[in-house]
Image 1: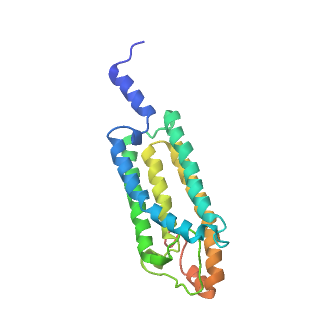
Image 2: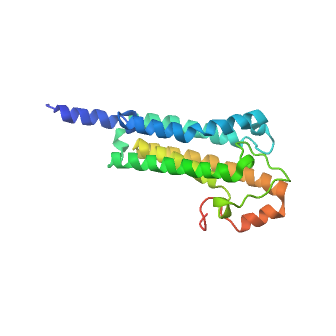
Image 3: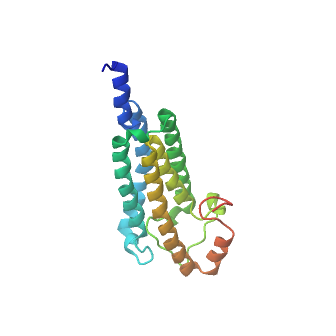
Length: 210
């Protein structure tokens, strides 16, 4: 059976996800480093302050962090191993994924600015802390988690494989669902009725929806 060099080249490229194919790799990893690089400083601060080991946190920080990385491993491997699950318009989804990843990171940075010193990786609620209602926090209680979800959804789209997309989406949502339960329990315990009132007039993740 005869295959043209063009056909062989296309098949090889499709086995390899676009984030690992030049020049797409340059774009994706530049965006990835820009998006996730800022997170390391906040994580170091949480580890240094002991917030990740507090009773209030109840392991929620590591649930999110480790869960995300556990999700990334099979997502990357399956993107290589199951080329039959590649999106039909792979290049289009690659660029869409990068846009979603950038949008999620910008929303995360917005949350960092709005919360200021009260943004922590580990749950640390204090009675004297205010309830921030600036920016996105006016309508939703956890815009940073919505943003984090968008970042991983963007990665899944960029990998161009629906199995990878589903794995990344599921793991990040599962981690944040647990985190939100722990965080809101701590905030209600520390801030009392004023946080309960804030919960009543806002949504968790998407304004007016959920």
